[in-house]
Image 1 (cartoon, rainbow, N blue to C red):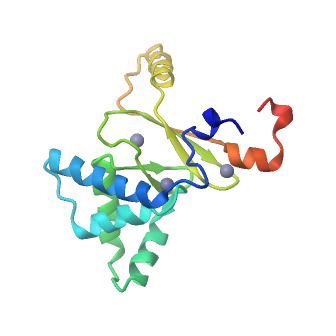
Image 2 (image 1 turned 120 degrees about the horizontal axis):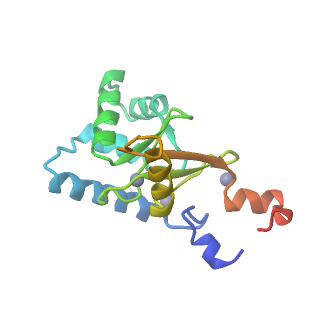
Image 3 (image 1 turned 90 degrees about the horizontal axis):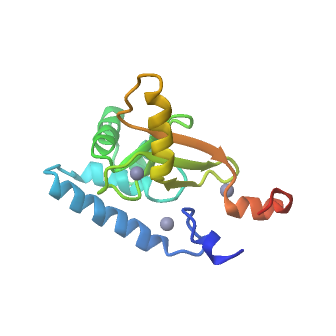
Length: 171
Ligand SMILES: [Zn+2]
Ligand SMILES: [Zn+2]
Ligand SMILES: [Zn+2]
């Protein structure tokens, strides 16, 4: 696999994920400070759980993990924390999976295009201004003004494609 491909939005299998998580949490803290938002212990913990992997987390898995750590928050607490994180743009919701992923750059106003691997469930966020522009134009032809975009794109990630032999597809 060539390096430009592994440097794609998908996390490399051997990347330092601990660094990923601490960066995400540090970014979130800075973001909240800058915007006068309160990242309470529960909200921070929920974000940390979402950051645990690069695959989306479901609300119910988050509840279960919090329970395992000895806290037993009521489901509304978790839903409120998720809503806060969504409003603060620290996470994205993947509607088709009813699950959440951490945003890779909460400090930047962006529309998100999420590449969702149907094999390993890894999600990569690409925020491609060209895709955004095309969608904006397409919508405006119908008199529609886009406020926000979250595009979910399903397929197979570079690793799964390599494992399944993707040569004939021109990889
Ligand atoms: Zn990572
Ligand atoms: Zn994002
Ligand atoms: Zn995959």
